[in-house]
Image (cartoon, rainbow, N blue to C red; front, top):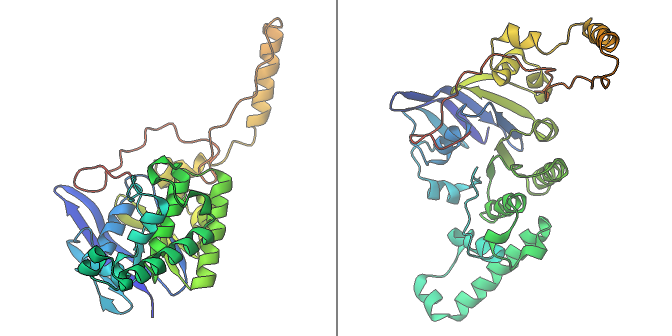
Length: 322
């Protein structure tokens, strides 16, 4: 039985069709990636899955049970752990306090006991603190234990938010751009952590991610969204070179996009000849600097010169980037 199944998920905000007929399956112990250009509907899909949005059509099934209309707090108690594109922690509190707050659903004393500071409440607080310390050690964040969250670098915040999700004892983790704000080495370390968490705790994960090396390293299966529709799905190595995916990221039609992924075979000779002519015509000028290529999009040498079509923004306010 799969852990999470999304079937025919659709949602509309006024005249904007944010998602249409999306199907996603996440099996036991898998790490599944959800990728796509900005505005493709990825975070909207997460919000529908976790209960922040109510889809117009479709179902969300968790371990065989229909949980489409279940609110976020109940899904968290059921085993849904979630991080956000914009870090969702109390910035004025310390890292330790945030990790303890994340465990509120598991607290075994009532408000009265907490206000009076009974022995039961004190004992429970020590248990929460011990678990928070264990998570800090697991993630290598012991040195920020007593620091205010608002003073921490963004990359550290993303790792700490992962810790807050772990503090809820999740069965499935939904991670929204976990490597955002990290450098290549930090993103590599994050990938190692995710693989270790799956192995040690038997976690299942669904993650939104733009960092392609991280997706290729940790994901077992990848789904690609574009304009709210499922464009492709498959193993990471297949998705990386899929013509429709390349086209979506370059912002053109598939044949045009693929044409841009290869430099003409005689281009080097043409550049050399052009350089020689310029040297003969104007020998007193400095040698021409080598031509620089545009940054690659998975396999592209040079992006198409067309203006990319405007991507629709997620949500009713258009404030979400993914």
